[in-house]
Amino acid sequence: MARKVFGDSLKNAMAQTAQREDEASLPRTSPTVARAQASVLEEDKNATRLLDPGLIRMSAVMDRIDPSDGLDELVESIREHGQKVPVLVRRLADGGFEIVYGRRRLLACRELGKKVRATVMEMTDEEALIAQGVENNARQDPSFIERALFVAGIIRELGKTEAARKNAQTVAYRALQIDESLVSRMNRIATGIPNELIRAIGPAHGVGRRNWEKLFRLCEKDPAKAARIKDRIPRDAPAPARLEAAIALLTPAKPTRPEPKVDDRVRMVRKGNKITLDVHPDLMPRMEDAIRDLIAELLDRGPDGMSEG
Image (tube, rainbow, N blue to C red):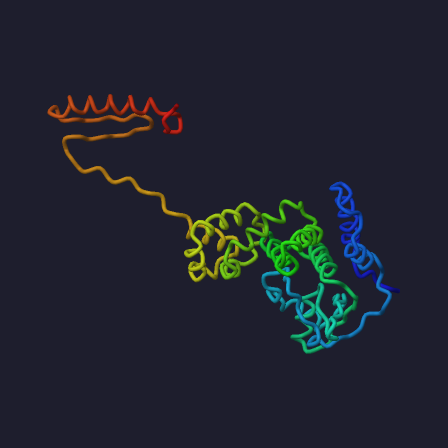
């Protein structure tokens, strides 16, 4: 029985993106989209085959920060039970193959020195990236920054000219099934944080956009410092804690108020919202005038300490 190469999630993705096209009054079907829909909706008409892993190259756009992270368990599973689910590859013009999805299974077979079971399809760059994004989102739980890096990779590879950039953004939001406005934001975050710093932090599963955007803003303010702090990230801490450490390292220290000079002639005690002053009699007239002037100045200011008007 032929196995469906793509699951319902990818079919639904194509259906949803087609509906978005109609709502946005975009051309109903371009040749690229038509080919993509035909590729991802059809059932595999050919049996899977065993390929030498050395003939399969990784794609230029990665969907994990480190595909080999935690690979030992998968290696042992394939060693004991064999490879149950084939990877998907596309045929290249030079006769080689490129992985579309199933990178970890490919890496596990490479480590075991055995051939990898694969389904081979003819796919364009756009079709392969859409399939990679939708399938991996269904199979795994990529973190926000991994998704952002995937978006940035698509735009980098497909949007090398101004004319091609719009198409690259379209491919990105179809691949990840996200709002088109989020594509630009994710791309800015992924490209605005030094790649070495992102890798030092790791995927940080469970951490959403806000913390990564906060780090991006800090990197934007001081890119030179952002490029230097990767070696100060605690390697033994969980990735979310590493992200917090990076934010702390880049956050400017709050200016401290100078300590008042010690003078026995004036003592101030604060308790709750009350301030008690113990003033030497010689200073009392000047102190009283100074306090009145200060109170008048504070009352002239707005609630945020800024002058009104």
